[in-house]
Length: 345
Image: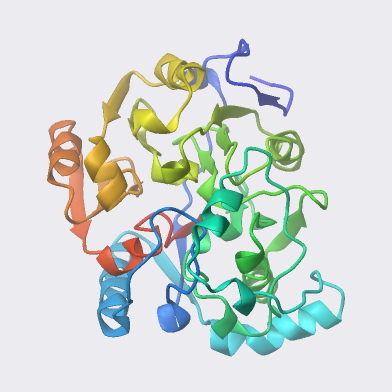
């Protein structure tokens, strides 16, 4: 089945059935970023706050890495070791230049949260030097740095909506260059926050694209052309669910876990029209434990943050094996399992 590579607005009629789309090979490579510099030093989403226990955060990261290691290849990006390559890439023109304004944003105010929740995001042009990993306490959340192609060693790089995180994708770009991946970019000035908002439909050449809070809706026509796939857009309307991956988790080709409060009514209708089973996480577990920020590794095993018993039971009752892992230190920054991982071809 051949389709024009374009995006479809939530209310737009879609001229295909997802089940009829071409198959997509599973991504079996998972990237994690060492949490050496993880901290909470600003506030760009409503979840952010609290003092990070670095020892506990590191232990939780290692436990997550161990789970993924049992299901495929795990790669680790070491920001400190990669910093020289990031600087070289910037000097050679392989990435954008940056200026240091990140530290000025470390005030914990709600203003940054409100700015991040703007309905018309644009890519930030200001951040700390990309060769200074200590300036990027959210660098550990690598899902936001890009999205892997349907097949072949290719990655579309993110362009972050907030100044505080604008230098982070340069680390993924440098790692990809070292690993032999082809690095692609969307047009300048369009915010796109990677797999945080662009999520592959299990087993199919189809992407779901969240927009409205971080990623610019205009990104998806460009992304569809880059990846040669159709994209189904979903509008996010609640700042507590600032990325698609904190409210929408495809578990297999027929099953999805969502938080309904994140979406407009039209977007909820679209989800229900594609998935046969729509599991709904309780609102309190979605806010307090980011229950939907889980990941179905292989269509059978779901890695889910600990402390969300109702969601865990619902996923298990649907026939999935659930692997719980503590992520409470990372919840202080508004991230959990899916935010911490980037799956790649």
